[in-house]
Amino acid sequence: MRMLPRRYDLDSMFDTFLTPTENMRCDIYEKDGSYYIEADMPGVSKEDVKVDYDNGYLTISAETNSSNDESGKDFIRQERFYGSMERKFYVGEVNDEEIVANFKDGVLKVQVPKETAKKTNRTIEIN
Image (tube, rainbow, N blue to C red; front, side, top):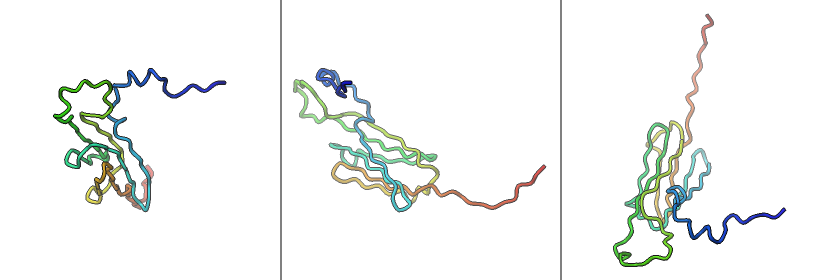
């Protein structure tokens, strides 16, 4: 059996419809009681990045605009992403005051504390 390549030569010619999530590659890992999300955002400035937490969901969004010096250029292929991108992650009910985010060299690093389950003891009445 012969394996086919993931992409054919002509595929890249028509590959202009990337979804916003394909432009924000993320690594997610767990360490020391927290979840860590590292998102690659090349060409995005810190001011254009937003991190929100609402009802157990962490949303990372960014918006980039093409620079003015690109007007008048006849692009043969344009691979840099311009526009808005967003990723949502379910992290559970956490203390949002403990979420920490840092942005450096085009990489956003977010530390989210793990969901703390409330342990209660009670006797269930049998009817």
